[in-house]
Image (tube, rainbow, N blue to C red; front, side):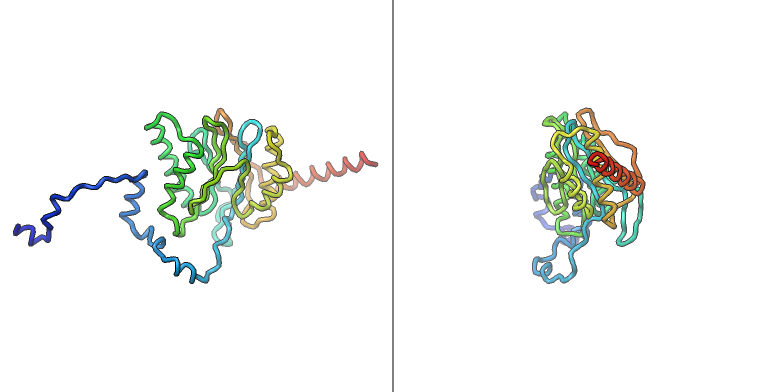
Length: 276
């Protein structure tokens, strides 16, 4: 008792029942608990949020898109990374494998996207160890949403488009750090997405063949990079099929745009000659 009084120990400490951690991802949650400053901004009240007179954050400086075609999913991204109004890297990779049949495209902060992408890849591998199979695309999207939920309300910025093939076939899911999750046949993300959507809406049709899908994906990213200051660099095209994920050689957007212009002029000239 004397030692307890000197050290300030309570008599009930030794009889306290242990608590059990029921979190889905205990390793990450314990990291947050050790570094509370990471979540400090999430404790702001709603009233202070409404009093904030700053302008809304800019759109993600990128162009990524994915859509279903006859044999799977066509995925395309640009390669420009920006830091404010400066181009920090003209040839970055904005898509990476989570596992052999799941490809993720990213938009937002590069560091945040890399962190959560690695976390998702780790959790998918652990899921396979426990259950003998990889999670479905929608299951991986929900898993990613749970991983990002402790950061809701902070300055974390990470948007993922998960393109994969599971037992139900091809699937495209979008997950954002504010908890947004949705699935669709066509998804485009980033500041160049309005321009990409305009091209896709004009040329997309369900069940299109691979070469037609390739031309549409290249043209959509190329035109978005031509009109959006935060998109550009190269065009990367990926394919998600039943046998896995593949990638086409990257193309320079400037050269590709000139090539597409020449093809369009030739096509219009041929139509004019046929009429005359």
